[in-house]
Image (cartoon, rainbow, N blue to C red):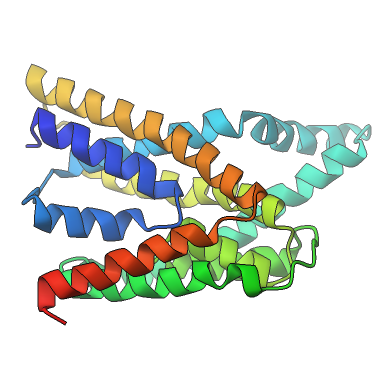
Length: 269
């Protein structure tokens, strides 16, 4: 089971990298090998993801409330333009969730094998770096989120199941490439991740039913969850600020540097 130090380190890494366009899965694979933090445990993994899921609910509580209220306003026949806008977001989130659900179900075993490879994580991290670094060269068409755009972002999210491919980075890249407004694409990217993250938590949590916890294990898991939640909130705020200022490409440069240094360290390129 994970120790107190591992709980703090892995919770911090999970919280920061889950939402920054630098790939949480890639960083966890790399740091697990560097620090020999192997086998943190299924329960700890579930609660770390639960912590980052909570951070989405907190940081986007206004949008999520509008998305919950809007269908009822439409049913009552007194929907405003804002209600119709967020009702469309409800539909787009469902649409964007389809590719990841299909790929996750049919290719789960193959994907899990890739997670054992540091080399694969570093190569995919390099690809993430290229995507994010190229965003300033994409013409900003400032379009609203559309159905086809959300579906394309959904495919990008499915691709991000691979370690080293950033979920937020690939979906934001796909949305901007499809002509979406950068800030709205970034916000939608976080909200569309809720079904995927929640689904992963629920699927993994099924295997934990009836698993007893010692007091020390409970403290470590609680601390890891707290750190993943706190740093998840920080990462969301930080990324949205970078997008607003047009500086998201700096995360791409970071990915390129880390991947190149990692390849030199691990395989001697």
